[in-house]
Length: 185
Image (cartoon, rainbow, N blue to C red; front, side, top):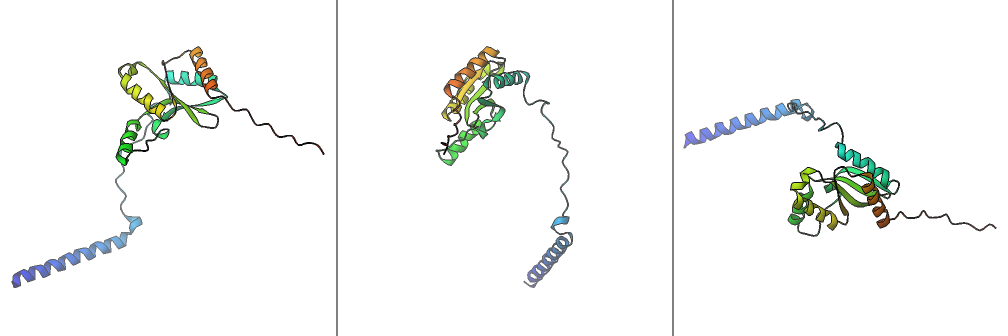
């Protein structure tokens, strides 16, 4: 019994000594002097030199020409910044958000007041195999209250002009308010 008590006593003394040394070491270095983590070899690089592909850039300029000055065109917008999921349980909303988390709209069209009206997608060859996925995406966009518009990768200017005309008819620009005239005294 005394052997066990002696062992326990020495174990306790050793634990206290170790604890005391680690506290003193921390006090010497302090929080600002703690060792910095080993630098990572990871570097940030550009995925590509331009924001848009060749077809996206051509379409962007056509859209901008046809839609100005009534509308603004924003390229490469994350759908998660435009659309949210609400009304369900926490898990249902998170699941719905997951469906758009990694999705990017080719173009978002806004009125001058920055209210969004449409999402435009360019359908290149990769979309031939994704018809159901594209339809589900269009349904989400429309359910959120935006127009879902799909164009061929390099639409001609006439198609863009017709689209611009349709958007201008659906969303006419409000007339500027005229200043009230004050009668002369």
